[in-house]
Image (cartoon, rainbow, N blue to C red; front, side):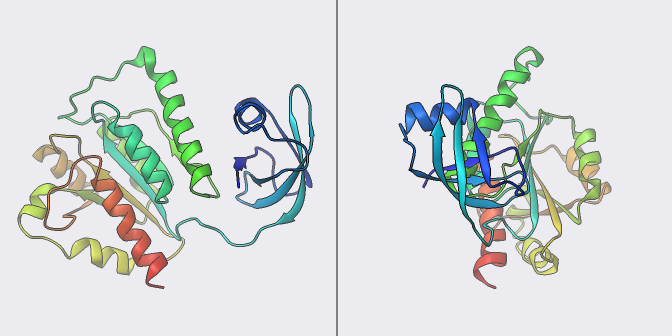
Amino acid sequence: MQRYFINSGSDHDRFFINGEDYHHITRVMRMKAGENIVCVTKDEKSALCVIAEITDEQVVANVVKWEEGSTELPIRVTIASGLPKGDKLEWIIQKGTELGATDFVPFLAARSIVKWDEKKAEKKVDRWQKIAKEAAEQSYRYKIPAVYSPVTLSNLIKMSNDYDIKLVAYEEEAKQGESAKLAKVLKELKPGQSLFVIFGPEGGLASNEISLLTENGFLACGLGPRILRTETAPLYLLSAVSYHFELLR
């Protein structure tokens, strides 16, 4: 069933849908009055709704019943990726959203190949946010992850200060056979806590970047014995979090 995120809260029994979602319902899905959709509110509540009316500007949907439960990860996971080339970040955002990430923060790493164009920044970030929204709808999320404009490493460190645990995935740790730190962290984390994880770009993180991060409370860890691509590593981490908190409970 089609899922749409609504700006209003859960104290409503009727929703008014416009903009891109209106276009999707009327032009893409060609829905009619009487058909059902799911509306998700800004306070992360979902309701089965029936389309009551379609005008030239909006879709009016009435609440049939509020649903219980949530599909969100028990902990908040923020993925910080060294700005990669091509469409790799779009892949990370799309698949990372499906796997439960709460936020995505690209950053300008020393070995980032792509150069960030501030003139195109707003359109680029809007596209990333749209990808997150569509992936959240497809995967039955209760919230849309926030996608930030790229920041510097120093600003990234500041953003991480309020998190319970901070990790940086480092291939040199994997090469040396380190495999226990991530498992230990997952055992220590409790539902409701937060995890901030940094991943390098294609060329990895420079040694001075690792030193700066560890000096600021980040734990360098491996992600198994194999060296993962920049677009694969965040998905490995999120899968491990999901397995630990959702499948082993």
